[in-house]
Length: 260
Ligand SMILES: [Zn+2]
Ligand SMILES: [Zn+2]
Image 1 (cartoon, rainbow, N blue to C red):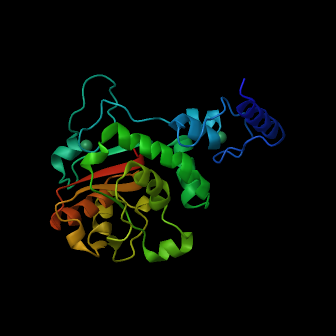
Image 2 (cartoon, helix red, strand yellow):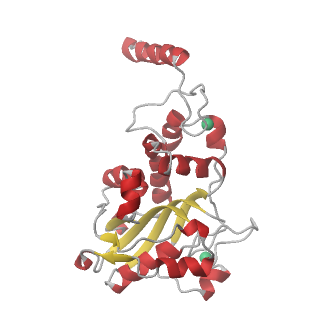
């Protein structure tokens, strides 16, 4: 019998008996089962179990087919195949496809809020694991040249101290070998928070709100835009519009959550 892992396991169990892990979403202490392996070999469920209790993890609603093949909207009817939704048929979409891990509700919404507004930056690990998992499910790393986070306005960046899209996505992108560029896409002006606006107002609100610091960097590139939430898609669409105008080959969108 190998004594070292046994002792490590025993130590971990004893530590957790005295100091059980506290869920980063609901703040309750919980028993961690089973014990995760090394971070490198950890599965997504291992990583999320390190930071979130079972009840919060069970509160996620992953988005699965049938969904809109363009914007990733999950259809209410659970039968049939992926197809284009009515909105994507009528509205101009500059991105090729958008996909998200889960529905923007319950514990996933709470986790994103706590990261963004509550400064719980440690949530970037479990949320990053979910983003990476979603990436691997829908994309092939060799077919993406550049990962661009949706930028925050400097004012919001100063208030918050970080861009959640950087925190959540930078590490796994590095691991997957996808270049992460947090500088090229920039916000040129302050915009009202989209949450308070109706659909048509959202589109107007973000129009012309972004610019490219180095347009040559995106030319001919296969781009993945990353953000935390896809609501109406107005922000992602506006970013995709200027990227396509600058000669990007295509723009895809990955978010943690999606409003339905
Ligand atoms: Zn919890
Ligand atoms: Zn759609």
